[in-house]
Image (cartoon, rainbow, N blue to C red; front, side):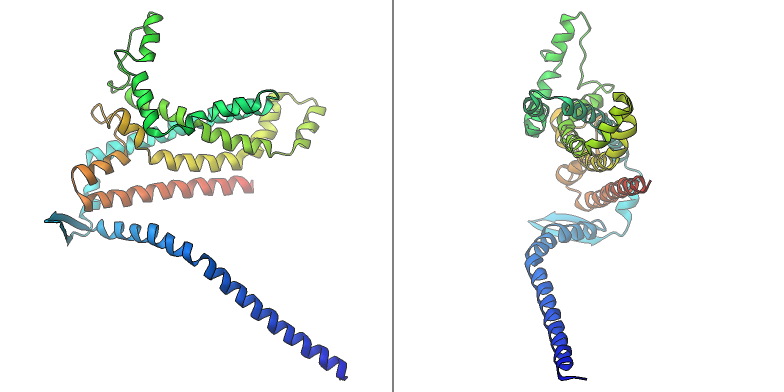
Length: 312
């Protein structure tokens, strides 16, 4: 082997070692860079969840400012099956979540399709459509509680002008949950609208131009082009809204406080009662773990559906 070949071989090996060392240093630097964020996430999410899980197996009482913990095993989880309030809240939560999310998805997609076709005043329409999501929840509760009031509410006043009998929207068991669902649809439809509008505007326009050349009608473009291409966005939006709707609290608390009876009792409000009204920390922790499991299961199902639709 010549001297030049040996020098080249040695140089290549040294360069490889230097490159490997540089790669290792770079990887170490990346871990050091994200370590504060990982530590913060561990402190604010993982540790509280671990404490919640441990507390679900304990009976916690307070005396003199100190807590006394006693291990009770799975008794809290067994008690969930006989808790009528929890069962009612679970049923109402499923009804609320699926009805509200379905309404938001349909309205959001319809508004996004309409807004994507507008050429003049597009910014104004977008600002109007996203206005409800910018209003704080406590303000929305106050607004709609006044609008749905039996005596002087705007809705009943409008019905009186039309000669229709007034109705106690929030005080009747037949319409209380429906009223809360309507308020949630009004509040969160802009969220779906924004995601759908972004998805529609990112679609390749050459496909639509080719469809127009072939003589496709607007409903055919939607059925065979827009809807199939929007399926990933629809599934992700559905997953986000379903998880958030399952955790609804502020609208129920501000409008009905779970009443009348258990007509608008939802899981989040039941948790609030167990923790802060009844001071049953261990039982509330077990209920929280069960709810987290259900929400996680819904999220996994939604993401699995998205993956399956993406493959097809």
